[in-house]
Length: 154
Length: 244
Image (tube, rainbow over all chains, first blue to last red; front, side):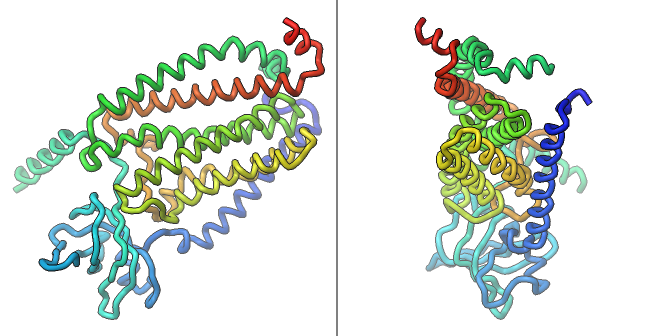
């Protein structure tokens, strides 16, 4: 009780403000829930394979570049790779310059269209980076530790 | 508690107290930003993926945190002004707005400059970037609305309502990276788990953030003191102060 305003009209005003914020919160919450698919920046390979993505329309896909899937053309800038969410894979081809962070195992977001044969033709590829920051030595140490674990299991 | 609260509501009391705190805040700002900046830009190790480019984090992240913090200060002051009709609260809200807008702008610009080399684009309409841009518009709307209404009391009330409606955007910004698919990565520091950052990179980041906090305090005090003198120019204590 000690923290509430002492006078009745001030308590009423505080109540109104709390009510207003809650009202706006609920309204915005419902709107963004209804628009969830539109606010999401990209579709996952599972969604694309499951037919949720629009055909004949530009859209974005997101996922990891599958390790060992990157193939570069010898005479042009064309690159082909698979984007995976570990459940499903989606083949992607792209012609152009890739961002510095593009590498196998890296998260990416690509914009483009789905071809009839199920290949995603990207017009733009963006690299996503994760929220981890560490010095190169630490990353090296983790990699070695994982290798050790793997050999021990074998 | 209530006594201190009522005292702080008096412009004269605020003027005297902030005058005493101001030099401390100023020197702390300078010290924290110098130490944090040197540690972050020179001593901290490079990142395993981004090399030295990640160092823009030492401006970007504190600025982004401040953009949210200042908004909460501004909206709370607005609420206090609405409920208790406290002059000081109106002044704090009104003086916070341009500072918050500046932090938001800084966060957007540094983020954009960081996005180009790392992501491959300056801008993308994902939930995090868009909601932060809306925050900038909320600040600008606040400043514009205040300037459009001549009567200070009416202006403060209208602006407080705008600020309070906009509060809903604050959790959206923070959780946007969890609720929706975004290009922006998840939270590194402000999460339940332990921070996903090397301790040698994290400490300068927190120092920079503290520096930004004290910078905000310093600027807010300076602006609010000017505003107090201006609004109270007809009272005897201000006249006495000026005569001295």
